[in-house]
Image (cartoon, rainbow, N blue to C red; front, top):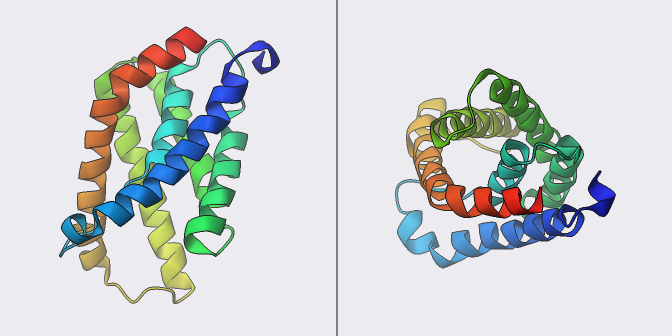
Length: 172
């Protein structure tokens, strides 16, 4: 049960830190990362993904945490409440279903995270397109936004996989 676990404190603190680093990395590296291609870090979702992937014995209701993180993400970064509020929990739900089909290792983590991030960014793009918040073409989005974003976030996953695995195993 979560009430007797240090995860009750670590999970929200990790979400807050990840939200902070999402914006900080974008700001600090905006000149070098965002030239012709858009590398968008998604550390907030990565933290939620690691919690979903590594925490086994405790029912943490990760979909609710994902909805809360999505709401905060919407309010802080987009100003439009609703897109990430629904997309984060949906991606976690799909990730959990895929997780049950695959073994727990870094290769399955990369595959599931790739699928989850693709869902997040494709749904977000089409939601913004429906609301006329972007005029970006589909091909430009796929080549200049989705591709580079997937690459940078898979690199973050590979770098943080072992440290987060150790952290969550100690806390679980």
